[in-house]
Length: 237
Image 1 (cartoon, rainbow, N blue to C red):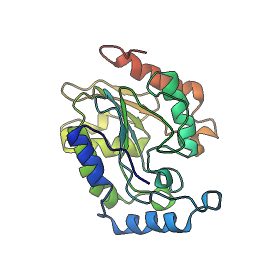
Image 2: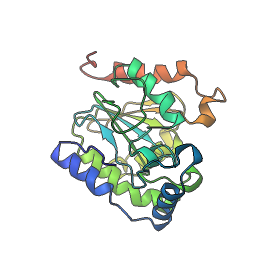
Image 3: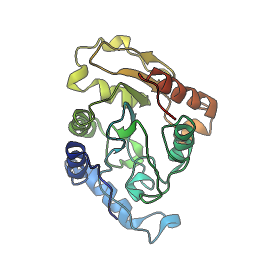
C-alpha cells in the first residue's frame, strides 16, 4: 500500500517524513500490532499500520483537525477519516458543502479529492482506546506545526472535538492567545487577529456522538456552511 503524497515540495516532504515517524514506542507497538492481528471483517487486507499523514488540497484555506486515526479505519487505509463510521458521517457533509469530490471514502484509490480543504489530526498514530497520552500529543505537535508551515493559505481551522482545540492552542504560534477566552462548544467561533486563522469548533463525528444524537446531520451541515461562508473569496462550486 502506497500513499499519494502532495506534489507540493514542502508538504509532500512533511507527509513522507511523518509516515516514517517512530517517536512514541507505545503508539508504534499498538498500530503495528493492530495491523498484524486485524479485525475479523478486514482479515487479509493490507493494513497501513504507520502514522497517517494529513491529506487534501495543498492550497487549502480550511484546515480540519481531528483527534487520531481509528485502529481499523485510517490505520488500515492510510488516509484520514477513511474506512470508518466517522468518515461515513464526515464526507457526505463535506461533499454537500463543496469541499469533497464525493460523499464517501473507503480507500486510497477511491478517487476522493478535497477542494480548498486539508484534513489532519493532533495525533497521527492510532492510540489504544482512542486515547493518546499527553506526552504523545506533545510529541506529535511537531508534525502539526510542520503541516501548518507547509499550508500557506489557511484562513480558518475547524476543530473536531475538545482535544483537537487543546492540541492546536498548545502550538507556539498560538501561545499569546488568552486561552481562558477560547472555550470549546459546538458551533463556537473565534475570529482571531491576523495572521492567525479563525477557529470554528464542532463535536467530533464519532459514533459516540452521532448515534446518540449529540451531533446530528443538520448540526454538522451547519458547521461546513459556516466554514464555506467565512472564506474570502467564497468557495467556488
